[in-house]
Image (cartoon, rainbow, N blue to C red):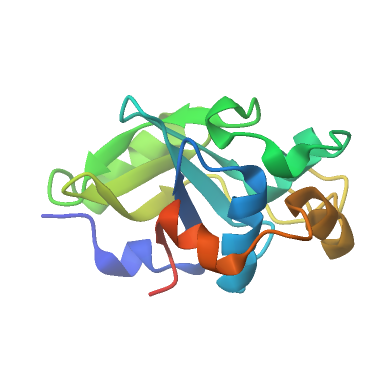
Length: 165
C-alpha cells in the first residue's frame, strides 16, 4: 500500500522543493508566490540526487547576519539537514512516518519518479519567536534576506515542487 495522498496533504507537511543551485532569495520569492509561511519546510535536491531539508525559519535565522543572504546557494546552506527520500509506492504511510521520525530533520521526502510530491513531517514545532521551530524573524526581515529585486518569474527554473497544487 503506497503512502497516502491524504497524509501528504496535511497542513503540517507544507513545503517547497528547489534545486541545490537555487539561491536563498529565489526560495524566498517562491515561498511568497505560493503564500507560504516561515514554518514551511524548504527541501533541496543536491546535484548528486540526495535531499536536505529545514524549516524556512531555521534557514533564515542562520543567514540573518549575512548581508548577502539572498545570494547564498542553498546547496551550501549549513542549516539544511540530510533527509531520506522514498518513492510514494515503495512504502506505506506508517513505515514512512517512522523513517521521518528517525531522520535528523524529522522529515522524509516522498517522490514519484524521483520528483518530489510531498513530505512527511514527524516533528511538528510551531511556536512563538524564540522557541524551537518558532518564527524568529519578521516578514520585513525575510524580505531583506530574500532581496528586493528577485523576480518572481525567475523562481520557476529552480522550483521542483510544493505542497500547493
